Length: 478
Image (tube, rainbow, N blue to C red):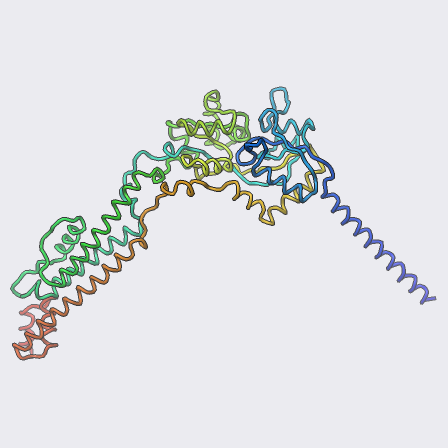
């Protein structure tokens, strides 16, 4: 009886496991089929560089077009794409009716809106969005001449980098000290320390180095070979630096990219009154400033609202054109601004980005298309395909076509050779001065019949502080 019960219990467990496995396989099968969209979708988009652009043959190309192609392959669906009829993203009018791509999705004229459509709370109430396929924010698009200071008090220092200026100052001080030492050590410069005044004092040595650096003749003139070696090397160093400075300064003056941006934040925009600024009328950017509680952003909204007939534009292209042709700053999506700044080398985007947001694919409210599309977008992120598309369509052409416009300060490694030659010349000058003093000490030792070392030590003592009185006192002491 017990064996029968055990056998029956075992069979029941095996049956339950097989049933669970079949249900699990069926679940995975259903999950796979849910990610496939078995229909032809109608896609609406908007002409916005580089997201969607018309080619010469009338076909669409751009970031969103490539993204849509990747998603259609991943989810195995066909699609037809067209440009939104009224050329708008989607806002609600006074009667509560949505226009643009949002309105077409709500009215089921399009299954999806694949475009740089910002995910906002107001739009999320009437349509559904996928996870963002591109992160962006609000920034300032400016013309380079308008965004830069007219003058810079210490701009004359810009041709050399800070590191190079520090290296020059250190080299000047070391060279002056070496000249001071050579002036004391060399017997040709200071033959009789007890009766003769040394012409190369520390102050005179500093003055000589400064005069030579400015290519001016200064006194005293070097007499010894060692001092002349140091003077020649320092003159060579100075001429090379001056030539490099003049060439870099000419490039600095003639290059528009050397100008220091004056407007980098939205507060900077409010502090000036020379440049007007605005954004796209009835856009998410305009609503961001309108609904913000930040005092700075509220002032920006009040400025634009009071001058809306003059500062608000109808399209992004109109805003870009106005920035290029007048003193105007356009407030809008940073991703779009990065694209036009990469293509138009006279434009620049400010560093500050506010109001972080994302672009998502839109479908009707609670659409079953959202989940598979979101998963497919996340897969594109994980494989790095979206980053590849961004690099492809946001490629900077300014550096490739206008290499002459790029300018950077002269760096220390550029002039490393002349610093090396200066160091070798200073060392050679010190060595030669010591040899000159050794030769004099040897002659003195032979004449006075004393050792060369004692004569050399005596000469060094005379030149660096020991006097005849001190020597006589030393002799008197027992």
